[in-house]
Every structure is written in structure tokens, then in C-alpha cells.
Length: 404
Image 1 (cartoon, rainbow, N blue to C red):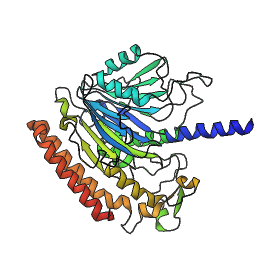
Image 2 (image 1 turned 90 degrees about the vertical axis):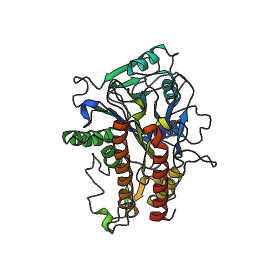
Image 3 (image 1 turned 60 degrees about the vertical axis):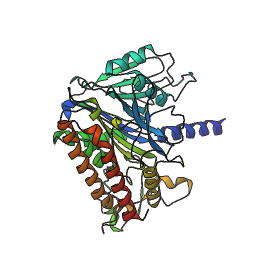
Image 4 (image 1 turned 180 degrees about the horizontal axis):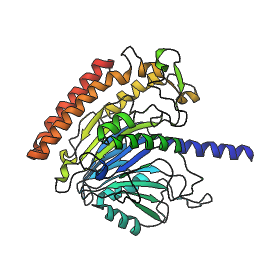
């Protein structure tokens, strides 16, 4: 009996670790340009991710999916043609410990369905109210819309609580971070508290400096190597000098199980909804590069981020090949120990240092075009050529930098 209980606990902990996402809903009140943001740093057992466009339902949508989900049943971050966007994090403190409802793990299915029919934050609240119960979820759903709405919905099998991020009594800074517990749940349970504290500190500093932007979130928060409990910062601790090669790599925001990082940037009131942008780092965030994505291009998304004939997205595959250099220990415990030399080598050969100029170029070109499109309205005509250009640049540079 004891052995069975231990096995069960091991499985439970494993499930929690595998779904250890870090995320935030950011009101336009907190961003420099007034546009709301959704951030999801995804952790999952499904390492192969891809981008997919859906044309069914009331609204078309674009989002992050598991590459092997060929039927498109679930979506893990995305937005639709009405400007409604959604993400989630798993929660581990909303349901009672003795909960017996067997319907579980339907978060991705629910988000896929919500994008088909919801145009606003209020629509999503009604969607949850009217959906058949039990919902089969225990999650925090973050949403924004084209009207400036921004909220979290902490959702269990039968009930939910809305946290309005535009309400200063709920979110004094205009943003709310979530990991793997809910504020309205049992305060003595849950997971991800160290990552929550890390993200809270980083977001507070960025907010004070007026820097809550997609670029900062993806380059600094998603790749933060600072640990809020131990105080260790791998980038500044001198570890990469050779004094220490392997580090115990758990409870950082990026983790072995990290599979992607997405920031969905909304619009200002009155702007064209098609200018909503899904900034996407597909694959392992420490070894991949951002790609800006727009639903306005329909199914003609960059070939690097959509599943090819082999069922995998090329950029995700490339990032996972680079990731192997960071986790060379092949024993069962190898995922807990990262080799920091390939990542941070101070001689300039570290993966992060080599990737940054490429990613900066992608950001600079994308932001320039994004700003022009807001003024001239030529995004629909120009996105295809821009996609081709960015796709070619990233492909060629990856080959040049890493021989891939």
C-alpha cells in the first residue's frame, strides 16, 4: 500500500512539473503604448509545438498546438478574428483534494472552443457560465480583447472567479502574474510559487521602468536565469567562467520542460483588429528565436513555425537540437542538470549571445513594419512578403550560426 501511494505521489508531482507554465495578463494601462498583452511561457510533456490556423466557428483563429494534434482538438495560446485572445496555466489548488470528478485535462479543448465563439472578455464569462458542467478543467485562463478588456478567470469544474486586471483594486500595477496556483484557491496548496515570485519581481522592475513590452517579456522574463529563492543569477554568477559547468536547473522560469513562449499583443481602441500580433518563440525558449505572426495571413503562415510533412515545425526541431547541448546527461535525472557553458560561454560562443543579434534583427524589422502598417493599412498586402523575408533570414542565420 505504501509503495502504491508513493508511486501515485510521484506521478502527481510529475504531472505538476510537466504543466508548470508561467504567464501574465497585462492591461493597456501598464504598457508603454497602451496595448494589452498576454504572456504564456509554456511547459509541457509535448515538446514538439507548432502554429495552426483554424477557419471553423464564428471566428477564425491562430494558435499554439501540440504538433501531434493533427485533428486540431486543443489549442494552448491564441487569438481570433474578433481580437479575443486566450492563454492558460494549470492550477493545483482550486479543486478539493478529495474531488472525484473524472473529467479532466480539457483546458486546451475549452480554449479552442472559446476562440470559435467569443469576441470579448464578457463573452468568455458567459461562455463559462453556459458551458456544460463539469468543465473538465482546473486552470487560470487569461484573456484580452479588442476593446481593452483584460482579465483572469480562475476556473474549476463547476465555478469560476473573474479577476479584472483593469481594476486597480485587483491589479494595482495593471498586470497580474499566474503560475500554478489560483489566488481564489486553497492558499496552502498549489505549485510554482518560486517562479511566481521571480516573475513578480521582474515585472515590478520592468513596470517601474515603463518596459512591459513583448520584447522585454520574451527576451528577459522568459529567459531569466535568476532564481528568486536562492538568489542565484546564472548570467552574473561567474558560473560560465568554467568554475562550475553543471547547475541544478529547476524552478527557473525557463525549465527543461519549456516548449514555447508567446506574447499576444492587442490593439488600441479603433485600430484594425488584424494588427493583433502573436509574438512567438516556438520550441525551447533558450535556443529559439521569436517570429511575429498575424491571423490576417490566413493559413499562409511562415514555414518555420507550421508542421511540415514530417509533422513537426522546423524551428521547434532546430531549437530542440540545440537544447540537447544544454542537457547532455541522458540518465533519468538528466533533465535537472544543465550545462551552462554552451548557453553562456563568455568567449562569445554561447547560444544566447549568438542568437540575440538575430532576434534583435527580427524584432527591429517587425516593429518597423508594424508601426508602418498602423499608419498606412497595408498589412494585408505586405505580410506575405514580410513573412518570406523573415523566414529566410532566420533559416539562413540558424544554418550559419549552428550548422543546422
